[in-house]
Length: 126
Image 1 (tube, rainbow, N blue to C red):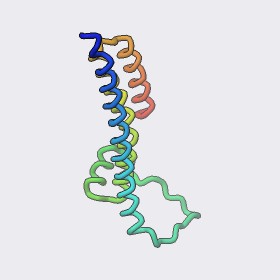
Image 2: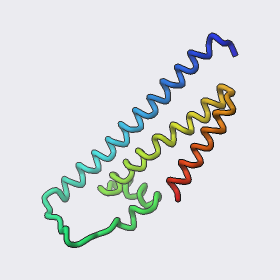
Image 3: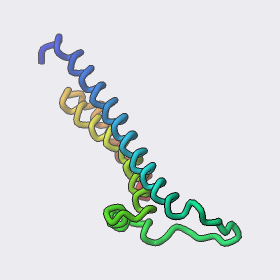
């Protein structure tokens, strides 16, 4: 690879990673906001019963149920889907970093970033 092109490739990768994070957070925040507006539209005037604790509904505990709730425009499902998008944004950045380091043939950073990805995924799914 031509040495004069390497800094431009690194700049392009940084721009792509920055845009990935920015767009991911904007989309996630927008989805949560829309779900929140729908939720408040329906339940905004209700009086909460703070003496009675209601846990998380069972349909918000699995990814497939969250996706189906969001697709069927269930308010809490939309909010939960937005939160999943927010969590997925840095994971996507780490995956892109692995690909970028592999493209640059920087195998030491590929290994380090894969370790970070494994730790990140284990902490999410455990």
